[in-house]
Image (cartoon, rainbow, N blue to C red):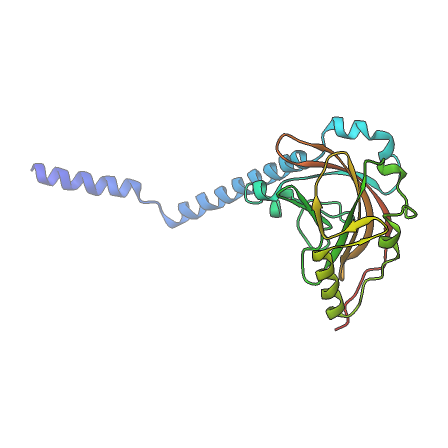
Length: 234
C-alpha cells in the first residue's frame, strides 16, 4: 500500500510539473518581449552613460554654438568592450556619423591610454599633437594641420597599404610628429586626418578636455573639412 501511494505521488508530481508545448511557447514569447524591453532600456541608459556630462557641455557651450563642432566621450576599450551593449564598448567615435558604435567610418579610438586611427581594411589616418592650444583657434593654416589638409589619399590599394605602414611607423614634418597612434594627454589639442574608404575622409581638430574617473576621455572637436569619399580602384 505504501509503495502504491509513493508511486502515485511521484506520477502526480511529475504531471504537475509537465508544461505543455503551447504553454512553453507562450512563456518564451513573453520572455522575448521582456528581454527586448530590457535591452531597449539598457540602450537608452548606455546613451546617457556615453554622453559627456552636463558640466562638460556647459564648459564649452559657446564653442558648441559654432557649426561643425561637438563633444564626445571615448571609453577605454580594454575595460568596456565586453561589458556594454554597444559594439566595442563605446571606445570609438565617428565624426561624420556622430556615434560611439564601432562601424565603417569610425575615426578615433581609445585603448590602453592611446588614441588610434585607421581600423578596418585599407583605412588609415594620421594624428599629430598640437600642444596646449585652444581647439577653437586651430584652422587649416596651422603649421601642424597644413600637411594633413593638403594630403591626397591614394586610390590604389598597394599605395593605401603603404600609407598604413607609414602611419604605423610615423614621420616628422615641420616640427610635428604624425602617426596613427599617440598617447592621450589631457589639455592637449590634436589634429586628425581619417581616411575610411567608401565611407568618409575628414580633417578634424579635437582637444582632450578631461579624464573621467572610469578612464574615459572627453573630447571637444571641430570638423575642419570633409573631403570627397575616397575610393579604391578594383
